[in-house]
Length: 124
Image 1 (cartoon, rainbow, N blue to C red):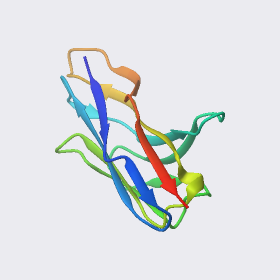
Image 2: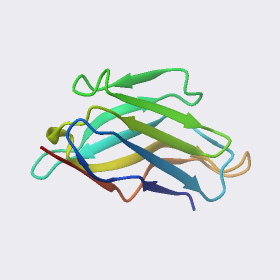
Image 3: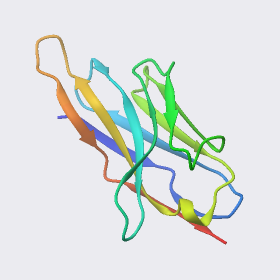
C-alpha cells in the first residue's frame, strides 16, 4: 500500500521561507503527476502547484506564482514545495497528492493518493 508523508511545515514570520517535502513509500515503480494542495479554515481545498511525472512541466495557482516552486526527485519518490516570501494568507494545512502510482507492471495502479497534511502558519 502506498503512503505519502509530508514534512517541513511550521510557524514562520511573513516574508520568510519554508520547504515542504512529501515522500512516497511502499511498492512503487513510478508515480504520475503530483501536486500540492492547501486548505485554510472555513475554505475549500485548493490546488497550489502541480508537476508532471518528469518534473519538466509545472503549474501554479495565481496567488503563489513567483513565490512557490514545486520540484520532484523520482529517485527518492519525493516531491517538494519551496515557499518564499510567505504571507499570512498562505496559512493552511498543505496536502500532497499523487495522481497515479504504479506499484509494478503486474499490479494495478492506485489513483488519487493523499498525504495526511502538514500545517503552515505565517504570522504577520
